[in-house]
Length: 197
View 1: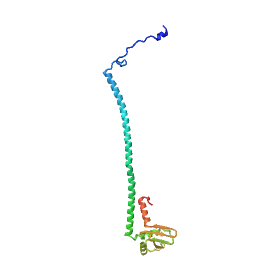
View 2: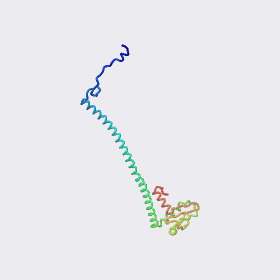
View 3: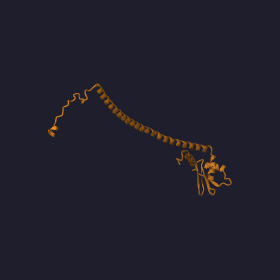
View 4: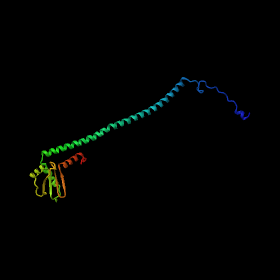
């Protein structure tokens, strides 16, 4: 026999499985149950993983929306805090102004202390010292205050532009603003943290 004939030798025929099990035999209840359990376990683990991923994505989306909502809710409170702070400063300034005016009306003699303090702030060599006062305050100061020995000599100038309770001291080389407005502004600046100068 030649090699060709040996290659063409018939192969024995095998009987195909008629139960569709590829030769494993007929499907039994145990094998069917094992197949169902494997299919269930595979579907469960895939569903569980998919469910966890979907749940995490949904939770993350809700957290982000909640965070955005909280930030949006906090923004008006930030604005409200700033508004309240400004209103409180305005209220404090208004109260200080009213108290200052009331004090000037109820105790007009405090102008004497203001004049003395302002004159004492001048350099010792100051000449031609003029104290500008409101006319009513000027009358009171003339009646009450005279220059003591060792103090600078100064003259009183009635100035209706200077408000009650304050004065301006003017020399050839310097000027001291002790007007009620400037002293009040100093108090307000101290209360408002130097924001309103």
